[in-house]
Image (tube, rainbow, N blue to C red; front, side, top):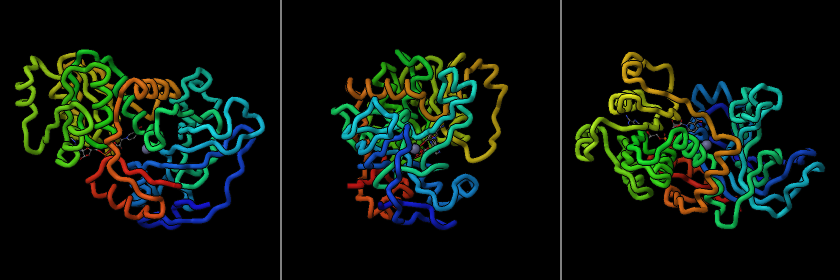
Length: 341
Ligand code: NAD
Ligand code: ZN
């Protein structure tokens, strides 16, 4: 089968022919139809320090996918051949306290497909049946292929009650934009999204009913005054990984405000903790998706009118992966989807 693998310790990914994997007794075999390219895949493409430390050479990459089940392991009785699906790419252990308590997303033994284990940039993917998420007919494959990052957005956005609240999202990457759509869908009042990239802000306004603010040019406080906010934002969703964005968020929040942190700063970064203490701010770190509560809520919201289709700006056949990665690396795209036929 055709795959995209990290064959050499340098920039790029390489097309590689591999045998189709055999599903174990508790696995399914999935014929991959569409895959999303993630920021993580860009780190692996660029072979930065994190990637070199984390990803074994030779690994088939990719973790955002949708496809169709084509074979079932001997013990799998609750899924069917022909079933369309996406799936959770975090493979959990069964031994930790958290796993045994059913808090699967907090399992410290988690391993990721496309990062630690063979991934989805391939014509076929072997996945534990436990990780499979069936897709209703109303969700097309290309949306199925971005449920992983939409799940990051949903997990973060649903971390705090947003009904009637004013929400600040820092970072209008694909995940920030989708979080904006989710925040509006669940009933937030004003949703302001910041970035310094005008293309990303334009896309945000196209995809969701949010107020884009270019913080390199506009004063966020002036926007808050225009919206007649008395004190500030009630909830902040940090989705840039940028230190200045987090500072600005703390500055713009009400007393007792709440922050959900998804963005990953590149290294250690200084934080003015006393300001956080005096403002009595609650901060929650968000990793991955809640397994499987986020998946349930996300599919329910998509069935109930949540529309993120326009966040996909580019589509390429898998053979043209080099062009697709170039578009992603340019910062002039939303989600980029590869078609595996
Ligand atoms: P992205 O890199 O596409 O988007 C980040 C955006 O932040 C960019 O558009 C960038 O221009 C913007 N930005 C930079 N400086 C800014 C500033 N000062 N103010 C406002 N915006 C600024 O990333 P993405 O794929 O949308 O992911 C969002 C973040 O979430 C990334 O940091 C990513 O690493 C992280 N992430 C975390 C998890 C997790 O499980 N915690 C999962 C996926 C992604
Ligand atoms: Zn991803």
